[in-house]
Image 1: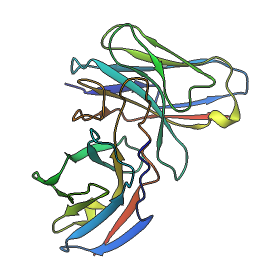
Image 2: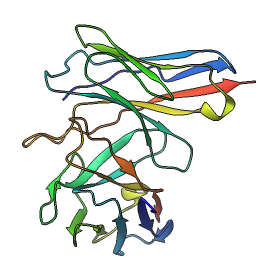
Image 3: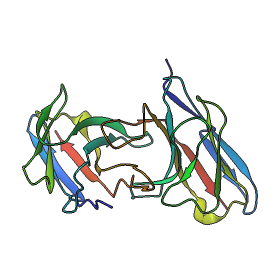
Image 4: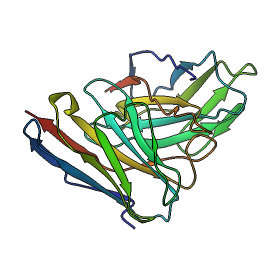
Length: 112
Length: 115
């Protein structure tokens, strides 16, 4: 099981770039790295997914170094509405494995 | 296109009562999942269904049963509720089994309290 470690909480100000790092030292060769966002009283929402190097979409970028033992979610110019919990998920279900544990996530608070 | 829907939104049970949580998706997804989320914690997988007609245990299956009624619907049953099952339950679906490049879509959750 690819255990993940993230900071419990982070604060930022509106308009700043926020980087949240996730450590996953025992990531398997075929594991993807996926980030989800969760607002209070809602289900998680997919943000971005990657395997290696850099992935960018309309809301975020994901940086993955060559050894893949960590990943960094980058949110450009955050706003108050980005206040949420962010989860890093590594791996998935394959064969008899049942590895879809989200971990405790990072509470991002964006301040005005 | 409603995505993933769950019923009920809220439920209070007494210890020993039974109930079924319903989940449906309209995205023609093959795989479906049930998670629980305890206060201040991440989601833990209870059961999943890779495709219609199959179900498998996740990380925390004890005290639960599931039924994949058809491709759209995946229900979670508590046969004899216990206070330790007080939690928020999320259903999710994905095109194929989650992990290898298949993102999951989540429902709004069911908040269950067992007294």
